[in-house]
Length: 343
Image (tube, rainbow, N blue to C red; front, side, top):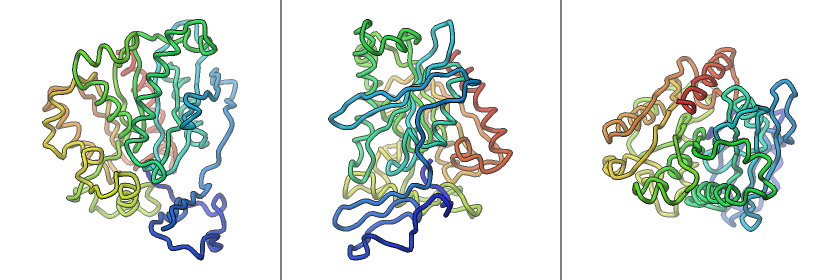
């Protein structure tokens, strides 16, 4: 998810600007303001919630610290099951600039995902831009996997209670919107070469990646980006442009490979070892064309790709539930994810 429609009942009194004496340089209304002096103001459009879960889901949740120095932490979801389950490392959306593993919409979605897809989920709360521009979020993703590897080696440690329930012969990277971008770029790092892929994470093995509406961009506009947007769209073109200005390295444009994975003609994809990738595309999303182009480039590079198109819904439908149809499509997604990770 890279943008949200503001619900005035949840947001602050935006008419009262505590930084009225400072120059405003970037703003996405109702979500974030960035001032010339470096201060950043984020608005509580989505409430943060504790890690409690309804008993009927049969999932235990807990917050765990990964790196105190960088304040990297994750929310863990462990289904009640007798068998060992796949481990899925998930990155939330928010244009790299907003969002949290504590957001109620993510907590609800991922607790249901853990329950219905039958997997242990580690929902990562990574550093945000513009205070921490890319590649900070990618580093947090990589370091999370390295932390899991270290904990797995220490089988008698404090995290053995949940690691013992994981099938550690394989793990999956996943995320939505900006989180899907993070998952893909972490996957690229692990797949730099076949030898490196097998050694970096051993004894863990990266078995697949799930990209839900991956947040990619580029200087040239696609047809879906130029198409009229429904009122209240979760991601607008102007918001996407702002997020890229705030998250890419200073001086970069939208042809940077972290924004446009096809900027070099997808040549890099051919030299990288990647496991199977599932890409979830929404046909009312401004990112639809980029997501489909990405899938085609991956297939042309010899990668295994499963593309699933969800009709009649827009960006971030699976967490916003703006319509009965979005709830239906979300329920369709759960068994598809389960089938992918158990294939």
